Image 1 (cartoon, helix red, strand yellow):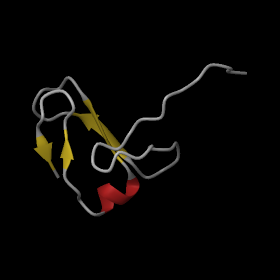
Image 2: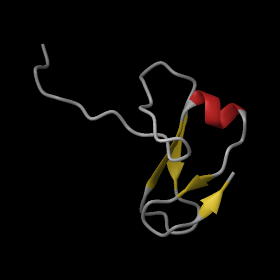
Image 3: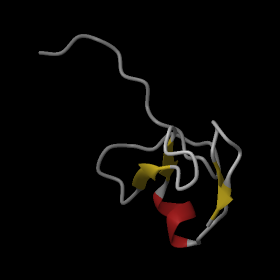
Image 4: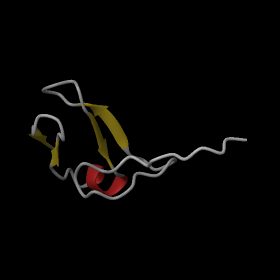
Length: 60
C-alpha cells in the first residue's frame, strides 16, 4: 500500500484540484513546452482561457 502523499494538480483556468477519474485534460504548454497545463472537466467543457505558469502563454 502506498503511504506517501500526492499533490493534486490544479486547473490552470480556475485553480481547483483536478481529481483522478475526472474528464480533465493535461498537455504541455504549446509555446514553451516546459510546463504542464491542466484543465478541469468544467473549464475544458466551457473552453475557458488558461495561462501557462512558466511563460504566461494564454490559450483556450
